[in-house]
Length: 102
Image (tube, rainbow, N blue to C red; front, side, top):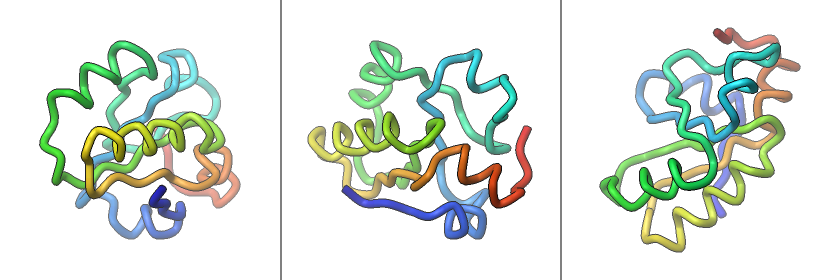
């Protein structure tokens, strides 16, 4: 599984697609979300998304701690995606670093 650090992602904001796989409540909750990210909840919604996307695009998956986004990254690789990444540490780490969120 390919991974990207919060620091690396911060430098690439605006140049890479960010998909947050948490629930709506988590996305809008106290940990917030990364500006420009898309909420595509883990489960049927995410499965449908993965089946209908270009396999070459760069996508970073994000969740609370990196566990669910890690599972998603593995699933995307199994489906033939070549440029997907798990953001290590999730929004917990993003917040620990004091990075901007919405």
